Image 1 (tube, rainbow, N blue to C red):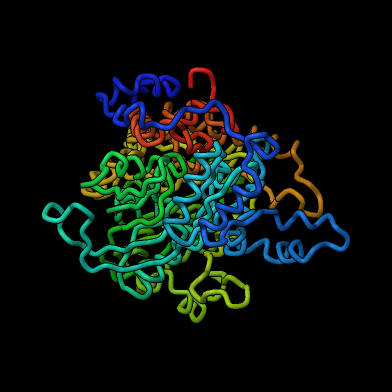
Image 2 (cartoon, rainbow, N blue to C red):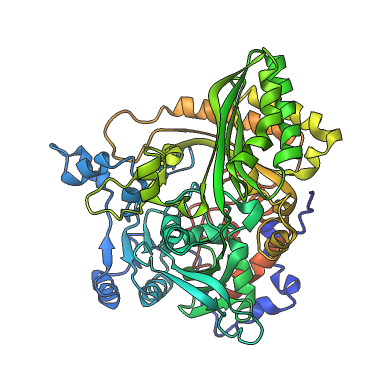
Length: 609
């Protein structure tokens, strides 16, 4: 679905009063904070004195931390205990998330590396967040917000900054009949869950599904932060049935740039409510808690897994065409999600999930494609094809997997770790990864039409000559139920998501490369070569989908027309909300709403910004 760019991102801010009908000027000029030209760094004359930092520490109950990477002690002889501990748990995302000085991604070649803030407020309450926001505003500090710390683009960390670290704000509360503040009489009570900003999705799933017998739409990776995912839009394994996480948001508490605590829902601050549903985290305020609708569970969740190898390029091109046609006819519906990957080695990898089907029904669904493969000598099963189903309530049940399928989920291996803190084994490769290149594109459902399938197959085959690609079918809403599409339409996400059958992701990475780690440093020349190949791959695929937008949380750091790619025709409205609630630009993240007014590091306001 093609969307015209209504205004270039750089024009959005100057034209806000026109675009918003004057709403952008709702804050009176004498009440708005002064616009400052730059932020201060350590060593600048305006950097807060030790006495000021001590006062902030008292204001937050002692929870102000001076940060240093645990890898900083690796250079000493012998290496410090912090270094040894960090290296021991380098593959544990729960450990990384518990370190305010670290991020889940260690960096991106020629883009950023994981660097700690100078100080962090380890917030345990909304009052702590308010104190941190006020301090940053009054002292012109670069402010960073981190819950799960999963940002690929480095937005959950920044050197020379003050970090609001919400990790300990992780309460989860179930509701039988929730009504938003100010919505009595206009909003029917409904089952919901309220989640603190620091909670991970495994915390939510454990409470809602394993113990509560219901479902909440969230992320596929269990260690992703709830707040960050909702603010980016948020896809889960079953998005074609349950929609996006943002569309399931009923209410949020958010601390805005003026230090005010606001409740945002459909009845109160509805413009801010709309904006945080997909407008990206860290740009509009600090979300401290969220309330999401919960849904009934089906009887079964399950998965289909396998790999098919073609013996020649011609056979692979034919296999690609067959898989596309099979997907359109059998899987393009609310039952199926996750991905099929097309490798550069002429192999198709299937890693799909399903809901609302029995194992027998799911096996019958795949039978035609498997029969087609088995009938041809040009193909072999590199990985045996399996279809498995389990009671839906056990899908995130750590004890169930320990007993029935050890190795599918990996424990947080630290002494005393919560028993429910587990990670899907397939997600372990992203723990601490150093990104070489990452590209994504929403593929319009029109490519599945019979007359266009050959075009898609040709583009996909050409893409794989440079790099493999994954089609994440649960990250596009075409094929979803009508109510879920309607709910997602009322979010800030790029409208292209409504008509996309999949998000294509092409990525490459290397092992963790946190600054200060012992051992060899990343091979930057190789990383750049791989990034170039990934770029050629997405160019080949985009020939079938020119103008395709991309998902803000899984996108290219170097995206040029990022405001159009991430938000499309919704960007001017998002910019108006930004101007209303943060006119001085306190909140900044790379390629976030309003970031076009600032230098790449967020410290210097650009001329005219």
